[in-house]
Length: 161
Image (tube, rainbow, N blue to C red; front, side, top):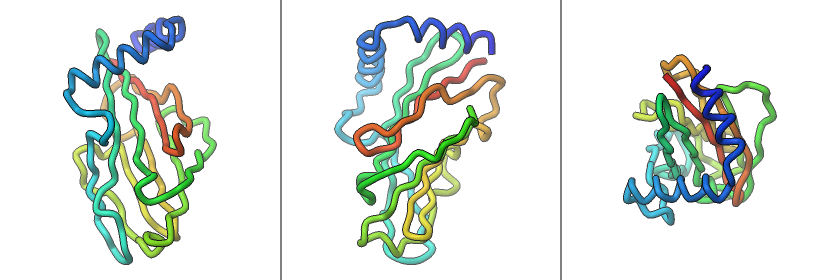
């Protein structure tokens, strides 16, 4: 936690423009256009009409001994609004979004994915997007920021050795 704490303290003093520039540089290094999600989670449908995938914009900013991750879920593909579920948990966050009428019958989830710490579940006319860092085997990992940006779930989290 010592390394992670140092990073967070340093990050708190950096200009937001500097951070945005670093994220943009990382995104360019990944050579993935920011207009489209760079990660697709496949939806395993149980019943109803479901989207085939859920897109994520996932950017990584490496630093010595770890990395900071920013993820934005493209819930706008199946829902118009999203709500952050309040919690003090630093390793788990959940958002809920009422499904649009064309997907309201959907029951299913993203499961067995390579990125199992990102999970979307469709049930009861809602989509639940979760980031669960408890599924990552690393000594230091925590959610540093969570909000709704552009009507989409936005989570920043860090991990250190």
